[in-house]
Structures are given as structure tokens and as C-alpha cells.
Length: 259
Image (cartoon, rainbow, N blue to C red; front, side, top):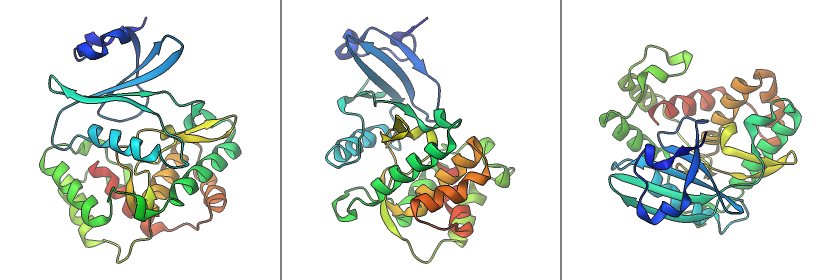
């Protein structure tokens, strides 16, 4: 049965007309997400406890900026803070996320590659969101200091590490240069959308910003390995137009442990 939004955080009065909803559990975001059938329209509502490091207010700004580019994104209908929660209401994207295309890996790889190319071809000078390493490492350190790093959820290669060890490794092995593009920031398969097998847009854009292209390629390859198998990485990178970079893959997957 659909759950009432009011059973989770209390629904603000300005959203009361939304009524019944179904909670979405796919994904690893700290936000609560609901799918809402509102008349003839499908909407998504996200709620996250207010915190100085919350990504939800920034996601609204990023969606609004991306809405003026050729990359399809949800349309923001409302964004505000109330009763110790940040709220984001937006339209649903057409199609399905790429994790639903694992039975058609060739289509999946092409959609993933074309989606990342579309993002990475945007002009970095037009993007107001800075996720270069100076900023990204500082944000990761802030998450660690605030107790927002889940040390029990590290990848197998870092199992048993502490968050402090992750940060120290990142500082010691920091790349000397960055190949800057507009990146999604969390380019896993559930955050990339397809329709009729083709790229259809991006969702969950709270970490979008100017960063090294391997910020996206690393997490996309990791997600592809997890969902489809390592044999799909080389053809994906070929479709995108890149070659495997073990050093940057390891670095940006390690950086992701702090987020």
C-alpha cells in the first residue's frame, strides 16, 4: 500500500495537496524519497534533515542550472526548509534508470557513455559549481569531522580502513593535475536515465560541479562492474572515448568513501 508522507517526516502544509505516495528505496542517498501520482503528473519528493553539510538545497540549484542546458533533468517545482527538514519537489524523468537495462548491456553502455559525454561537453566556464579537488577534499574532511562518513560501507579494497586513513591516503596520493569538465559527481547507473534504450537525462545531481572527468568515469565504471561485470568496462570507455586509468579510478573511488 502507498505510505502517507506524514508517517515519515511531517508533510509541510504547502505540500498537503500531494496526498498519498510510495517510498522509493533504490539508491544510497541519505534523503528520503517518495514517488507521487498527482493527477496526470508524476512527481518525486525528497526530504533530508537540515544540516550545514546537507546536499539537498544545492541539488535544487544544480537542477535549475542544468535545466538551461541540453542535458535533460527533472523540473524543480518547490524547494524549501521547514521543521528541521529540507524539501525538494520535482517532476519525474521519462524512462527508467540504467540499472534496469542490465539485460541489454550494449544499450546500457552506449546510453551511459552518451550521457556522460553530454555532461562533459558543457562549458565549464558556465558552471557555477566548483568540485575541484581543493573543494572536494575540504568537503570530505568536513563530512568526516561531522561524523557523516560510514566506515562500515567502504568498498572491499578499503575494508577495515578508518575515515581518517582514507583522507590521509587521498592527501598523500593526490593527482598533480585535473582534466576539468562538468561532472555529475555520482555517476552510478541509478542516477542516469534512459528511454527506449537511449540516454534520457540525469537525476540526483547534488554533487554536480566542475571536476576531473574521472570523478564520473570512476564511479560509472565501478557501478558497471557491480551491475554487469568488469568485461563491460572496456567497451563502455571505448564508446565514451577514453582509456582505462587505474590510478584515477582508484583515487576517485576512494574519494567517494567520504560522501
